[in-house]
Amino acid sequence: MTLLISNHRAMRQLVLAMAITGTTALYSTSTWADQAAKDRGLEIAVAVQAQDDGFGDSESAMTMTLINRSGKESVRRMRSRILEVPGDGDKSLSIFDQPADVKGTASLTYSHATEADEQWLFLPALKRVKRISSKNKSGPFMGSEFAFEDISSQEVEKYSYTYLGDETVDGITAHKIEAIPTYKHSGYTRLINYIDATRLIPLKVEYFDRKNSALKTLSVSEYEQHLGKYWRAGKMEMENHQTGKRTILTWSDYKFQSGLTDKDFSSNSLKRLR
Image 1 (cartoon, rainbow, N blue to C red):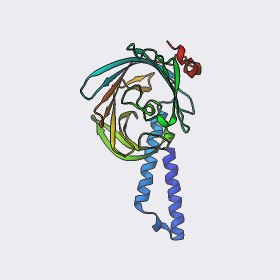
Image 2: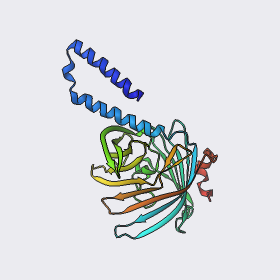
Image 3: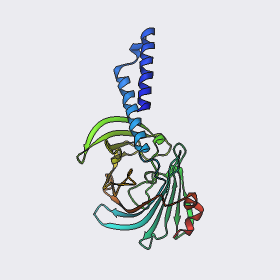
Image 4: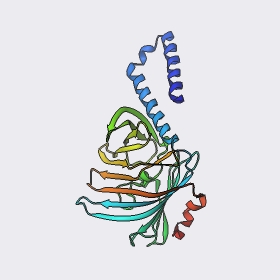
């Protein structure tokens, strides 16, 4: 709110100055409305991130269900670990346990606020750790409808925002926010986020590809609150409108502040994970 108020104060001062110099006509009502929508969009994005600050670290069990166009399913089970990094993006680690053909596969992500994310993938069949190029973040993660850039933490600085109004999502009032990637090599031209107006948590995200065509939709549900503050989803479903495929992620057994450190998120230790 402080950011929005200070911007409006600056606008009033600018209007006064232009009135004195006779240049007010250069700025239309639509210009002010556009700027207010951007201010409001950024304000909401900052609030969403701020309400999740301070969780420290977390662990959970996750199931990934891949569903092809004809409805055939394949299921993978894994463990997830996240370490909060104050002043930067989170570090996250996913370790696959089932089925046998992916057992031991591990994905490590260092998310960053302004620099390119760092990502590694350990493939036990090749017995080597593969660095994911920053130019290849739009590629699918482990054959799912989630891209590598989707599984990194979504830091505020990675996007520019515009508030598009409020809409209802599954009976819940949601802020509709357009987010345009500001980092290189994104697979998206824009995202439309629907944020629960009360809890400040995402309910739905619409993704548009590099041609600005509708690509996929993420639906987020079954939230539970932990430690009296932190909301975590129990289910995420990503539907690809262009391929007809879907991926469902479900979480359970959340644990927080168990003492994870940087050493638990080292790319050099991926081969030794169990």
